[in-house]
Image 1 (cartoon, rainbow, N blue to C red):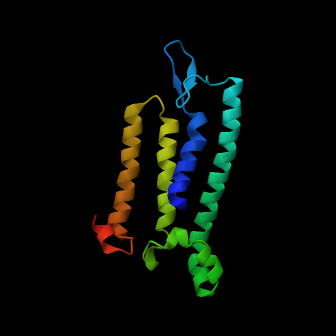
Image 2: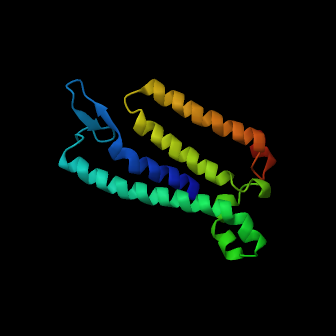
Length: 153
């Protein structure tokens, strides 16, 4: 749930930053075409989006550090810390415990693609394909899931 929720929160946080160009030179927020980029309403949206981005990046940093420290915690018998991040490691083989962080970065990457290439659909598709290709290569090389049938699919 936390991995899927993270990608959704990133997508929501970045929505105020997705401005597309009108033929007259004005820019509107992609999700809310009646909101023009740079006006007061957009500034409020950006402020809330920035707070949500800060929280999302904080979550990503905490999960990354935890994934790095989980082997140390496990060897030191710090079960509560390991258990707190079970959502990040529970679906994967013990030797590939870090794969959950890769899924978080994948979700962030998909959210950033739309923000960076709002007016460039070909660049969006190419970037999304590149993210999926890297993810697929890692999944094929490491076969990270505990359930073998998922690794084959």
